[in-house]
Image (cartoon, rainbow over all chains, first blue to last red; front, side):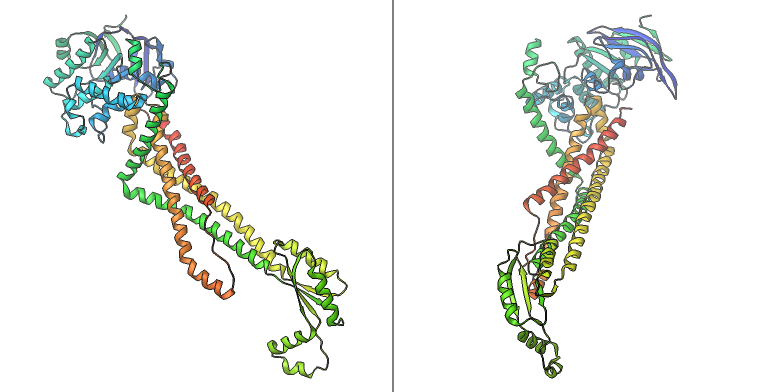
Length: 221
Length: 328
């Protein structure tokens, strides 16, 4: 599903953020990316979503070398992914329904199909009754559920989440993680960055540990 | 499973998966209509700034349009005046009335002359006596010093001053002619002025067209700045530049459209304001001049060009700024 081969990422201003990172994620796997803040977790996820480009090395997603993707190809790579963010990144002036519908509208789905899928996605995260609300009127946990619904509505094979529970209290964090696990059990590949080691050990799954830009655990070497 | 998913899921932009052309077209049309409406709704959310922008565009467009209308009407007036322009043919003073009468008859058959009017020596003297106030002095003359004059009205088909001048040159070669008078100088001047004015309309139009381009472009740039978070989220969810551009292009279109319609209304109101004084002027000169407004095609041209400028202005800004607006 995803393969990093000797990937380096250097920022001109900050120096080396990732050095010589190599690992595999198989289809259907549940992988947690841990490490202190600043260890390079976000950078690694940004490379997968082609928000940043690797300075050296290769990244293969579904067999495609995304380090060489052209500007035009990037949107189509992102459509294969479901992205979940720590700060949810919902559009505040649109309803829950419209937020979740966005990936489908972007991909050009038929309006009837959009409604059907959005309702299904909201049902899965337990927010079916709140589709007409604005994100501001929801709690943090509910907003993240909207974020998850938006990430899975187009049925991606791969979900990437950057500290999805970072802003939530422990009970809510657990609930959110369990939603992810449910999708994983249905076959969706998960790569979740989190520094909450206690929660990760409760949930269970393979762990990739980053230390100062290098993989100290779970890598290919 | 795969086949089934394809038959329900109808992604229109996916390259390989095969929703029918009809489905794709339907989704596309629905999306276009939605975006067009959404762009309008979004503009309505900030009614004040929208109204200001549209007003500025309208005034900018009304300027060259009204100038064009002025030139168009002046040209019509010029044409009217030329048509009534009379050539005066003064015969040699020694020639009697009878020669004049025959010449007038002959000239009437000339293919460029519509009408001739004979002024005999006697009527000329009488006119001079009654109009000039030289009556006393003239009475002391024991002979009539005035020549026979033939007033000639060229045919209406002679609209250009060059054509009239050619006729004048021909009349000058007549053996009976002493002096041929026609005031073509001012016609030349009027035409030259109108040509300058027409050229100015074009220059002004291009210049103010550029202004509209910049007004729309700048408005779109601000809008882009206000909505950058939304654009970034859309990019993260796999939106192409084309998808992100679409609503802004429609906003540009609406600005051009409403701006030009308002410009049309402004010009129409200007015309209404000057209509009364023009009518008075008409009455004074006994003319049958009617004020012309924009024709159907001119109106269509105005609105079409404005819409095009709106879309182009936003497109240029979008291409430049969307490249730079990237996640993180």
